[in-house]
Amino acid sequence: MTPTLPPELWRGILQFATSDGVDYNLGRMRGDSLKTRKTQSEMIMHMKTKVDITRVSRLFNQIGAEFLYEHVRIEDANRAVKLFERLSAAGPNGPRQWIKVIVVDNVESRGDPPESDIAAATITGILRLCADLRGFFWFHPMSGAHFKSRKSSEEMMTHIPRNIQIFRWSADVECPTFAAFLHKASTSLRVLVIMGYIDCHCTAHSPITFPSLTHLALGKTTNALNSLGPMPSLTEFTLRACDYNGDNILARVLTPERTKALRVVRFGYGVRVHVMNNFFAPMLVACPILQEIHYYSYLGHPSSTPWTSDLSHPTLQHLSVIAMGKTRYRDLQNARSELCLHLLNISASRFPSLDTVTVDRVLFGSAESTDFTRLMLRRVTDDFSSAEISII
Image 1 (cartoon, one colour):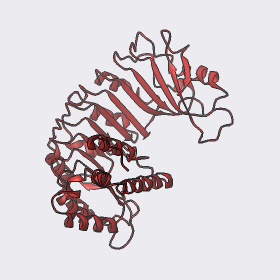
Image 2 (cartoon, helix red, strand yellow):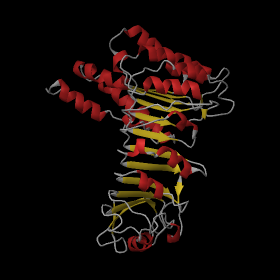
Image 3 (cartoon, rainbow, N blue to C red):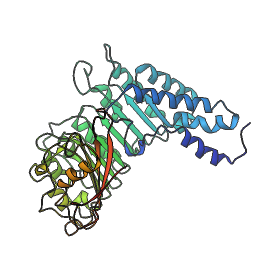
Image 4 (tube, rainbow, N blue to C red):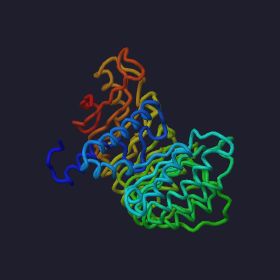
């Protein structure tokens, strides 16, 4: 028998219990671009849990049915067709209103014509039926035989609701089509993730203002920047990859019209930060209220640290670094003495608010190559030469 609690309390409990741990509201995915058997099996188990909950009682069925549709993931054309048929038969209420985020993953599609093209045509129909859609994620092979035509996916893009808030695009697309979508959705977009190649042959662009955009993430293509104008509310920027012109991408993104509110900057695995044309200097100058930097580092000698003696910032509070220093340490104290050498130029006079640095993917002794430890260094004097170290 179901205990007597207010329906809204049960709603909160069931939503928490059935969450798959993915923050769709920030345009993120489990494992992000890395799909593994473990993450796929976990997603299947989460969906099974949601289905089982709807069978407990009538109350749970009424509440839990919404969560079955809240975040919909489609990985082949057959699933897309089934969802379209279900929504078409459901009428204007119910599932059509419950779907908040649609994730379409065509990365492993096969066939001739490609299943992805069939799915795109069906997804177009689904988009027309979703009355309260907030987020849309599209994953597609970037190149090769499995991506024979962009026509159907670009047609689909024209039907994405203009009030969409979260948009993640991981596919090739023609610049005019992409720019037209951005113009349409610019007022409502809060999160924009662009991982595909923007095929641009335009002679001119009209910069688009995004008044509500708080999170922007880019792959290495610079063509994505051609249509991006002022972002007065931008608080977090992620650069997932870059070529040898990585500092040029930063210079183009971190302009005054985008950095007034910027607090967090993240660099993905494809951006290995080292002494590269004084990588951090322009960013520290451009972002007046920056608080956090997250980046991957090259394993190497302390002389390769990007934290040179000429850097400073008044509000930077935290650094998070992956793969800094050696590949393996004897013990905790050995790690402390080595890692502190990379941070000697970070002092209270130059970085008055920066007290903690976390270092990820640290290995000790004979630990397995995947048995990583996460460390925190806390500054207790003027600089990090005698920082306290702990495992977190």
